[in-house]
Length: 442
Image 1 (cartoon, rainbow, N blue to C red):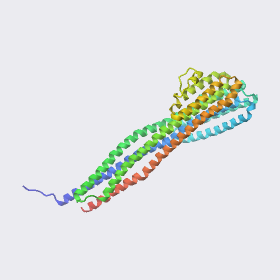
Image 2: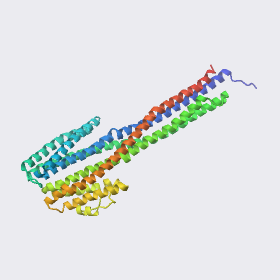
Image 3: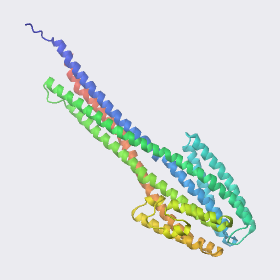
Image 4: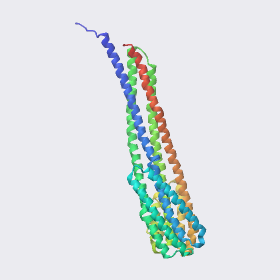
């Protein structure tokens, strides 16, 4: 029986080939691990930009726009309701009106810039700008007729009311719905970005874990082969590369989770809460305007009472058949836009909202002149107390939103700065650990 020995040259080529193959697999899996981490970070970063810097701020800006426009119309009604003996207050209202008009112009300009890649939103903004110009002309005509009438506090002449009706109809039937639709459109972008990030993050986690374990397996396999073949306990460079890979795997998962948690907190505790409370505040301002319109316009008195009830049910939903029924049944277990508020904030908010509704109920039992004085005094104070609490809650959730976005941006910056450097160092150390062994076969 003849035994054929394997030539030494062939054995050497076989050993060096295995070393190259194991090293190549290690480098490939390190590259895949880095790609998985960066892909996950890019997806979450895109969602963070959408919610924190692009569509999210645009949604909040449009929600604020709705309130500003409602306040403009309410201020016009208020100046028409106050007579010539309220001259200083009328002038203060007109000053506030001009401030809101400037704020609206700035908001629309900002929204137009943010909507440069969306022609539909651009057209909506353009139509709002044109419509507001028409509204201001109609409101100015009503104020001119009112100034010419020189009436005392109370309902102005019918021609003034008719002129105001044209302005308020334009505001409530055309402009406010467009502003609200703009909020819905940009809000859809935020929801899609959030939903896409959740599914992308789950896939990214799986990809990072799989590629990370493969990279560690390849490095350990390479270490084991070199230790067995070359009679060395370990190769220091490969040990460091393995440690860097394990660190990159854990750090990548931690940073991706931190980004995802920041995005979730920004969406749930920040963006959603701010949007809901801002919308509630805007509708509440419109309710306050309905009270002045109720006193101003005897032709539509019942209509404004009904719209006040509809908006009240949107703010705090209570089963009721009429406004007096609603106000008598209002309890702290309400739902609606303010139903998501919990704890002490809910108790505090309910107290001031109930005070506003109780003041409204008293006003509607009074005669015209007494009702106007009560509206200008106690009722306005009740509304301002309620509005102040809403504003404080919005500011708090805005801070939560900004803090969460900053935390996510910080995690993303850390990931982009250190993970690629660590993985590149690991790949370099693989080469450093393997090349001396390959030189032995030259």
